Image (cartoon, rainbow, N blue to C red; front, side, top):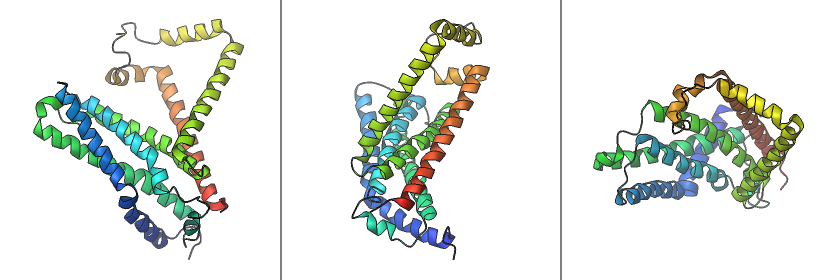
Length: 268
C-alpha cells in the first residue's frame, strides 16, 4: 500500500471528516442562512426590493464570512499541543489529510452554504416574487458568482494556512497578518512611485486612459455589467486581469504547499 496516497484510505478518512462536519459547523451554516432570510425580511419591511445582482452580492458576502471561519471550526485543533495528537496519529498520509482538508473546507462547505442560501432565496422568491425582481440566476449573476468563488478559494486558502500557523485566535490573527502585509505592500508601492516620479506615473496613467472609450458614463464605470461588456476588452484591463489571476494562482498554490508542509512537520 502506498504511503503517499491510497484512494480507499483517503475515502475512509474523508467520510470520517464529512460525518463530523454537521456537528462542527452545521449550526453556523444554518445561522448564516437564517441571517440572509432576516436581511431580506428587514429590507422588505422597509419597502425595498432586490434585483438578482443585489441578492447575489449579499449571498457572496455571507459565503465569504462562512468559508473564512470554516477552517478554524473544522480543523482548528490539528496543531493544538494536546488535541492535535489524535490528528497526527491518524493512519493516513500527509497528502491525504491535505486533500481532505481542501475538499471539506472549500468544496463541501461552499456547496452547503451556497445551496442553502439559494434555497432560501428561492423560497422568498416563490412567496413574494414582486419584491425579488426576477429569478436569482442569470448570465450576469452566474458569471459574477463564478468569479467570486475563484477569489474566495484564494482567500480561504490564506485562512487555511493561517489556521495551521497560529495556535489560537486563528481568524483574527490571520486577518491582522493580512492587514499588515497589505500595509507593507502599500509602503513598498509608495517608495516605488517616489523613485519613478509623479510625472512619469501621470504620463503612464494618461496612456492607459487613452485606451478607454471616450463616452464613459461616470455613473456606470463601476457597474459589473458595464465592466464585462466594455472594459474587459481593453488590452490594458485584460492584461491586468491575466496578471492578477496568475498572482492569485501562485499565492494559492504557495498556501497549500505551506499547509502540506505544516501538517507534515508541526511539532506537538
